[in-house]
Image 1 (cartoon, rainbow, N blue to C red):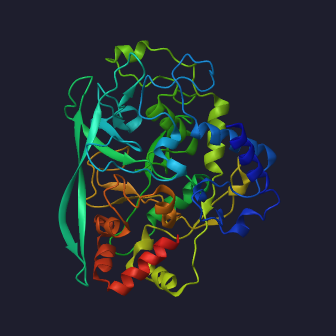
Image 2 (cartoon, helix red, strand yellow):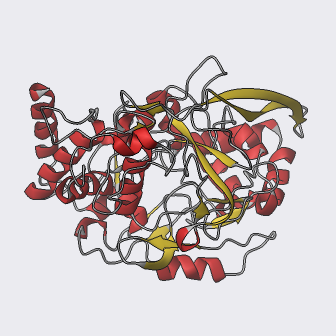
Image 3 (cartoon, one colour):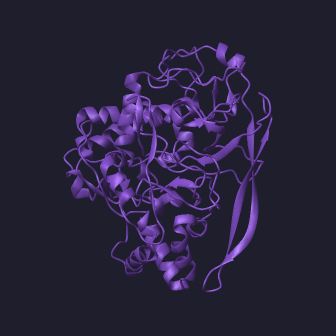
Length: 450
């Protein structure tokens, strides 16, 4: 481990004196290796490099049950899903759904709620299980149960050139429930998304998001901001992180995941994730109050804020250029915006005043009944999802060793993901279906270049 940390430090120090961020093309680094999602932005100060390294160690750390000899990383649970952040975001990339009920969820989870609004307008937690199914428990604390994944094959979609594309849909079966039946529950399976470029997305001004939401758009595309509870500010603000833009800031996203996924409390969420009826959970020892210190939370924030984006590739190749033009003509760029601009950033000046190409508008869109989970999240409805960024998409299969997409991993490739688009994306999908084979291949080549 010591040698690993030393090598990491040397790699970061080698970046000293690199060109300013804007010269690298909007927060990107030229790397297409299997470590491309883990690179820091160029030009970090010495203090930022050290905080980045500490945050990386925490992100990859397996947390342990309290009390432990190393009390800086204890406090796992009492209920939890995984041991480390890296478990759901392998190589800082995207997780994968199980292939069937014989496999456990390794890098995804299931959100839970019941009809109605919870505290501050968010989802109302299930009275016995809370807002997330925690499959694991520390010794003496029963895990909540397990969600088995079953796939249903659907009738293939026939494209304009006669190509038939099969689709599949996920169903969940809950088994081994330890705290009673899940009556009246609303569920939403979620795959762990990639985590690079988050600092750049956080630096896009709220005013820009609201202006994009107000702007007139063709094809029935609308888009709106979610408004969510900021636990630090104590007020409702615009959300931008999470599958439904239900988190207002990077630091709250981190604190929420630490508590929900690992059972690690923090200054933002200091209470254990135990419901009232989970008596063994409530009696279990803690690893401190809170278990994640303010300094550790800040190091994690620094790490995730300063992760760079892999630079696009092959942009001068004719098929890629044709595919990029098609992407615009089909209407994909109405939601997957190719260009955003960051504003001022007091904590990390490197993120300020940069033009970025994330291919998202960070807004909610009605994606139709086919993708609906039926579970509201603050102002996001059961058919609405935040536009996921497309940057780094072309390296996913190389880095994460799979090509599955969408919130629950149902799409086995980009083509299937597009065919699931409905609602506000219906007309763009129709144009994609009508493409000839050459046009479709050009579009896919472009997306593979990102």
